Amino acid sequence: MRFFIKMLLVTASIGFSQSSLAVNLKILALGDSITASVEAPKSYRYLLQDQLNAAGHTFDFFGTQSGDNDGLSNIVQRAGYDNDHEGHPSEPTGFFTENVSRAGLTGSDKSMLNGFLTLDYSSAPDVALVHIGTNDATGARFHNSSPTPNEALTAALTNIDKIISTLKGSNPNMKIFLAEIIPFGPDFNAGDPNERNGAELNTSFIDQFNAGVSNIANNDSSIFAVNMHDGFLNSDNSVNTSLFVDNVHPTQAGEQILADRFFNALDASGSLTAVPLPPALYLFGAAVFGLFSVGRRKEAS
Image (cartoon, rainbow, N blue to C red):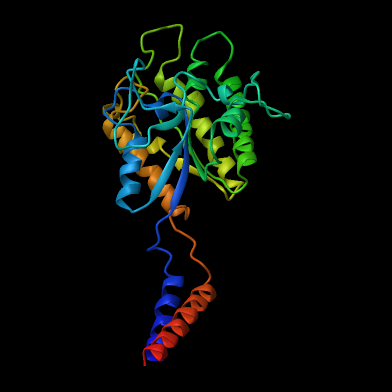
Protein backbone atom coordinates (compact mmCIF):
# COMPACT_ATOMS: atom_id res chain seq x y z
CA MET A 1 0.00 0.00 0.00
CA ARG A 2 2.81 2.39 0.83
CA PHE A 3 4.30 1.74 -2.60
CA PHE A 4 0.93 2.44 -4.23
CA ILE A 5 0.55 5.77 -2.39
CA LYS A 6 4.10 6.74 -3.31
CA MET A 7 3.36 6.10 -6.98
CA LEU A 8 0.23 8.24 -6.78
CA LEU A 9 2.19 11.16 -5.36
CA VAL A 10 5.04 10.86 -7.84
CA THR A 11 2.85 10.63 -10.93
CA ALA A 12 0.58 13.43 -9.74
CA SER A 13 3.59 15.69 -9.30
CA ILE A 14 4.72 14.84 -12.82
CA GLY A 15 1.31 15.88 -14.10
CA PHE A 16 1.81 19.39 -12.72
CA SER A 17 5.41 19.76 -13.92
CA GLN A 18 5.22 21.28 -17.38
CA SER A 19 8.61 22.97 -17.60
CA SER A 20 10.49 19.67 -17.50
CA LEU A 21 8.70 18.29 -20.55
CA ALA A 22 10.16 18.67 -24.05
CA VAL A 23 8.08 19.37 -27.14
CA ASN A 24 8.12 18.17 -30.72
CA LEU A 25 7.71 21.35 -32.75
CA LYS A 26 6.88 21.68 -36.46
CA ILE A 27 8.43 24.95 -37.66
CA LEU A 28 8.05 27.03 -40.81
CA ALA A 29 10.75 29.68 -41.32
CA LEU A 30 9.33 32.02 -43.95
CA GLY A 31 10.82 35.08 -45.59
CA ASP A 32 13.39 36.33 -48.07
CA SER A 33 17.20 36.13 -48.24
CA ILE A 34 17.44 37.04 -44.55
CA THR A 35 15.70 33.72 -43.88
CA ALA A 36 17.67 31.88 -46.57
CA SER A 37 20.89 33.52 -45.28
CA VAL A 38 23.65 35.18 -47.26
CA GLU A 39 27.37 34.79 -46.55
CA ALA A 40 27.16 34.31 -42.77
CA PRO A 41 28.68 30.96 -41.72
CA LYS A 42 25.33 29.80 -40.32
CA SER A 43 21.86 31.24 -40.73
CA TYR A 44 19.69 31.93 -37.69
CA ARG A 45 17.79 28.74 -38.50
CA TYR A 46 20.77 26.56 -37.65
CA LEU A 47 21.67 28.59 -34.57
CA LEU A 48 18.07 28.25 -33.39
CA GLN A 49 18.27 24.50 -33.91
CA ASP A 50 21.32 24.43 -31.66
CA GLN A 51 19.29 26.16 -28.96
CA LEU A 52 16.31 23.84 -29.36
CA ASN A 53 18.57 20.80 -29.20
CA ALA A 54 20.30 22.11 -26.08
CA ALA A 55 16.89 22.54 -24.43
CA GLY A 56 15.98 18.95 -25.26
CA HIS A 57 13.30 19.66 -27.86
CA THR A 58 12.71 17.78 -31.09
CA PHE A 59 11.58 19.65 -34.18
CA ASP A 60 10.92 19.47 -37.88
CA PHE A 61 11.53 22.45 -40.16
CA PHE A 62 9.28 22.72 -43.21
CA GLY A 63 9.91 24.25 -46.63
CA THR A 64 10.42 23.82 -50.34
CA GLN A 65 13.87 25.41 -50.05
CA SER A 66 16.90 23.80 -48.46
CA GLY A 67 20.25 24.85 -47.05
CA ASP A 68 21.96 28.22 -46.73
CA ASN A 69 22.54 30.56 -49.64
CA ASP A 70 26.25 31.35 -49.71
CA GLY A 71 26.39 34.73 -51.37
CA LEU A 72 23.17 33.97 -53.31
CA SER A 73 25.06 31.53 -55.54
CA ASN A 74 26.05 28.30 -53.80
CA ILE A 75 23.61 26.36 -51.64
CA VAL A 76 25.24 24.85 -48.57
CA GLN A 77 23.61 21.79 -47.00
CA ARG A 78 24.65 21.41 -43.38
CA ALA A 79 25.08 17.90 -42.02
CA GLY A 80 23.33 17.24 -38.74
CA TYR A 81 20.77 20.00 -39.27
CA ASP A 82 17.27 20.24 -40.71
CA ASN A 83 17.93 22.31 -43.84
CA ASP A 84 14.31 22.97 -44.91
CA HIS A 85 12.92 26.49 -45.03
CA GLU A 86 10.74 28.86 -47.04
CA GLY A 87 13.18 31.73 -47.58
CA HIS A 88 13.08 33.18 -51.10
CA PRO A 89 15.87 35.67 -51.88
CA SER A 90 14.86 39.01 -53.42
CA GLU A 91 11.14 38.35 -52.96
CA PRO A 92 8.71 40.82 -51.36
CA THR A 93 5.61 39.95 -49.33
CA GLY A 94 3.54 39.76 -52.52
CA PHE A 95 5.46 36.67 -53.67
CA PHE A 96 3.62 34.56 -51.11
CA THR A 97 0.18 36.00 -51.87
CA GLU A 98 0.26 36.06 -55.66
CA ASN A 99 -1.99 33.59 -57.44
CA VAL A 100 -0.30 30.74 -59.25
CA SER A 101 -1.50 28.29 -61.86
CA ARG A 102 -0.69 24.96 -60.33
CA ALA A 103 -2.33 21.55 -60.50
CA GLY A 104 -3.91 20.56 -57.21
CA LEU A 105 -4.78 24.05 -56.00
CA THR A 106 -8.50 24.51 -55.50
CA GLY A 107 -10.81 27.09 -53.97
CA SER A 108 -10.37 30.81 -53.76
CA ASP A 109 -6.87 30.83 -52.24
CA LYS A 110 -4.48 29.84 -55.01
CA SER A 111 -1.56 31.78 -53.59
CA MET A 112 2.01 30.57 -53.71
CA LEU A 113 1.99 30.04 -49.94
CA ASN A 114 -1.22 28.02 -50.05
CA GLY A 115 0.41 25.77 -52.61
CA PHE A 116 3.35 25.16 -50.29
CA LEU A 117 1.07 24.43 -47.35
CA THR A 118 -1.43 22.18 -49.11
CA LEU A 119 0.70 20.43 -51.72
CA ASP A 120 4.28 20.35 -50.51
CA TYR A 121 4.18 19.81 -46.75
CA SER A 122 3.42 16.50 -45.09
CA SER A 123 1.43 18.29 -42.39
CA ALA A 124 0.75 21.82 -41.18
CA PRO A 125 3.40 23.57 -39.08
CA ASP A 126 2.77 24.40 -35.42
CA VAL A 127 4.60 27.72 -35.60
CA ALA A 128 5.73 30.11 -38.31
CA LEU A 129 8.78 32.34 -37.96
CA VAL A 130 8.28 35.22 -40.40
CA HIS A 131 10.89 37.83 -41.32
CA ILE A 132 9.80 39.55 -44.52
CA GLY A 133 9.29 43.05 -45.88
CA THR A 134 12.83 44.14 -46.68
CA ASN A 135 12.32 43.74 -50.43
CA ASP A 136 9.08 45.70 -50.29
CA ALA A 137 11.21 48.57 -49.01
CA THR A 138 13.86 48.18 -51.70
CA GLY A 139 11.08 48.21 -54.31
CA ALA A 140 10.28 51.74 -53.15
CA ARG A 141 13.85 52.99 -53.17
CA PHE A 142 13.63 55.08 -56.35
CA HIS A 143 12.81 58.78 -56.15
CA ASN A 144 10.03 60.11 -58.37
CA SER A 145 8.65 56.69 -59.29
CA SER A 146 6.06 54.21 -58.12
CA PRO A 147 5.63 52.60 -55.71
CA THR A 148 6.29 55.29 -53.17
CA PRO A 149 7.28 54.13 -49.66
CA ASN A 150 3.71 54.84 -48.56
CA GLU A 151 2.24 52.73 -51.37
CA ALA A 152 4.72 49.92 -50.71
CA LEU A 153 3.93 50.03 -47.00
CA THR A 154 0.17 49.74 -47.52
CA ALA A 155 0.62 46.82 -49.93
CA ALA A 156 3.09 45.03 -47.65
CA LEU A 157 0.86 45.17 -44.57
CA THR A 158 -2.12 44.01 -46.64
CA ASN A 159 -0.01 41.07 -47.82
CA ILE A 160 1.01 40.27 -44.25
CA ASP A 161 -2.68 39.95 -43.37
CA LYS A 162 -3.17 37.60 -46.33
CA ILE A 163 -0.13 35.52 -45.32
CA ILE A 164 -1.53 35.18 -41.82
CA SER A 165 -4.94 34.11 -43.15
CA THR A 166 -3.35 31.47 -45.38
CA LEU A 167 -1.17 30.13 -42.56
CA LYS A 168 -4.16 29.96 -40.24
CA GLY A 169 -6.13 28.20 -42.95
CA SER A 170 -3.70 25.30 -42.79
CA ASN A 171 -3.70 25.17 -38.98
CA PRO A 172 -6.08 27.40 -37.00
CA ASN A 173 -3.99 26.81 -33.87
CA MET A 174 -0.72 27.90 -35.48
CA LYS A 175 1.30 30.48 -33.57
CA ILE A 176 2.85 33.08 -35.84
CA PHE A 177 5.97 35.01 -34.86
CA LEU A 178 6.14 38.18 -36.95
CA ALA A 179 9.49 39.90 -36.94
CA GLU A 180 9.76 43.63 -36.62
CA ILE A 181 12.34 43.51 -39.37
CA ILE A 182 15.94 44.61 -39.12
CA PRO A 183 16.96 48.04 -40.46
CA PHE A 184 19.16 48.83 -43.43
CA GLY A 185 22.72 49.94 -42.89
CA PRO A 186 22.87 53.69 -43.53
CA ASP A 187 25.23 53.22 -46.50
CA PHE A 188 22.71 51.17 -48.48
CA ASN A 189 22.40 52.96 -51.86
CA ALA A 190 24.56 55.78 -50.51
CA GLY A 191 25.75 58.18 -53.17
CA ASP A 192 23.02 57.40 -55.71
CA PRO A 193 20.89 60.56 -56.11
CA ASN A 194 18.13 58.58 -57.83
CA GLU A 195 17.59 56.22 -54.90
CA ARG A 196 16.71 56.48 -51.23
CA ASN A 197 19.56 55.40 -49.00
CA GLY A 198 19.30 53.11 -46.01
CA ALA A 199 18.63 55.88 -43.53
CA GLU A 200 15.75 57.21 -45.66
CA LEU A 201 14.22 53.77 -46.11
CA ASN A 202 14.46 53.08 -42.38
CA THR A 203 12.44 56.22 -41.67
CA SER A 204 9.99 56.08 -44.57
CA PHE A 205 9.30 52.33 -44.58
CA ILE A 206 10.97 50.10 -41.97
CA ASP A 207 9.82 52.01 -38.89
CA GLN A 208 6.26 52.28 -40.20
CA PHE A 209 6.16 48.64 -41.28
CA ASN A 210 7.30 47.49 -37.85
CA ALA A 211 4.65 49.62 -36.17
CA GLY A 212 2.09 47.90 -38.40
CA VAL A 213 3.44 44.46 -37.47
CA SER A 214 3.16 45.35 -33.78
CA ASN A 215 -0.42 46.47 -34.30
CA ILE A 216 -1.33 43.22 -36.07
CA ALA A 217 0.10 41.20 -33.16
CA ASN A 218 -1.72 43.32 -30.58
CA ASN A 219 -5.04 42.32 -32.14
CA ASP A 220 -4.51 38.55 -32.16
CA SER A 221 -3.32 36.50 -29.18
CA SER A 222 -1.84 33.82 -31.45
CA ILE A 223 0.42 36.29 -33.26
CA PHE A 224 3.60 37.54 -31.61
CA ALA A 225 5.65 40.55 -32.70
CA VAL A 226 9.36 39.80 -32.34
CA ASN A 227 11.50 42.92 -32.11
CA MET A 228 14.50 42.06 -34.27
CA HIS A 229 14.99 45.69 -35.28
CA ASP A 230 16.32 47.03 -31.98
CA GLY A 231 18.85 44.24 -31.72
CA PHE A 232 20.67 45.86 -34.63
CA LEU A 233 20.91 49.30 -33.01
CA ASN A 234 23.62 50.87 -30.90
CA SER A 235 22.84 52.39 -27.51
CA ASP A 236 22.29 55.77 -29.20
CA ASN A 237 19.72 54.16 -31.58
CA SER A 238 22.01 54.42 -34.59
CA VAL A 239 22.33 51.31 -36.76
CA ASN A 240 25.12 48.96 -35.68
CA THR A 241 26.88 48.55 -39.02
CA SER A 242 29.15 45.83 -37.63
CA LEU A 243 26.17 43.46 -37.70
CA PHE A 244 25.80 43.66 -41.51
CA VAL A 245 27.85 42.13 -44.30
CA ASP A 246 26.38 44.45 -46.95
CA ASN A 247 23.99 46.93 -45.27
CA VAL A 248 21.13 44.41 -45.71
CA HIS A 249 22.13 40.92 -44.54
CA PRO A 250 23.36 39.97 -41.04
CA THR A 251 26.81 38.81 -40.09
CA GLN A 252 27.13 35.72 -37.91
CA ALA A 253 26.67 37.93 -34.84
CA GLY A 254 23.53 39.34 -36.42
CA GLU A 255 22.22 35.85 -37.20
CA GLN A 256 22.73 34.98 -33.53
CA ILE A 257 20.54 37.92 -32.53
CA LEU A 258 17.76 36.63 -34.80
CA ALA A 259 18.08 33.11 -33.35
CA ASP A 260 18.12 34.37 -29.76
CA ARG A 261 15.05 36.55 -30.23
CA PHE A 262 13.02 33.89 -32.00
CA PHE A 263 13.97 31.34 -29.32
CA ASN A 264 13.03 33.72 -26.50
CA ALA A 265 9.73 34.54 -28.20
CA LEU A 266 8.94 30.85 -28.65
CA ASP A 267 9.74 30.24 -25.00
CA ALA A 268 7.75 33.22 -23.70
CA SER A 269 4.71 32.22 -25.77
CA GLY A 270 4.55 28.77 -24.22
CA SER A 271 5.43 27.09 -27.51
CA LEU A 272 8.36 25.31 -25.84
CA THR A 273 6.28 24.06 -22.92
CA ALA A 274 4.58 20.72 -23.40
CA VAL A 275 1.03 20.43 -22.17
CA PRO A 276 0.92 17.41 -19.86
CA LEU A 277 -1.92 14.98 -19.52
CA PRO A 278 -4.50 16.01 -16.91
CA PRO A 279 -3.44 14.93 -13.41
CA ALA A 280 -6.49 12.68 -13.22
CA LEU A 281 -5.08 10.54 -16.02
CA TYR A 282 -1.75 10.26 -14.24
CA LEU A 283 -3.61 9.21 -11.08
CA PHE A 284 -5.57 6.64 -13.04
CA GLY A 285 -2.37 5.25 -14.52
CA ALA A 286 -0.78 5.11 -11.10
CA ALA A 287 -3.81 3.33 -9.70
CA VAL A 288 -3.68 0.70 -12.43
CA PHE A 289 0.06 0.26 -11.92
CA GLY A 290 -0.39 0.04 -8.18
CA LEU A 291 -3.16 -2.54 -8.39
CA PHE A 292 -1.09 -4.55 -10.86
CA SER A 293 1.87 -4.43 -8.46
CA VAL A 294 -0.30 -5.56 -5.53
CA GLY A 295 -1.66 -8.42 -7.62
CA ARG A 296 1.82 -9.52 -8.60
CA ARG A 297 2.92 -9.46 -4.95
CA LYS A 298 -0.05 -11.66 -3.95
CA GLU A 299 0.79 -14.10 -6.73
CA ALA A 300 4.39 -14.22 -5.55
CA SER A 301 3.32 -14.94 -1.99
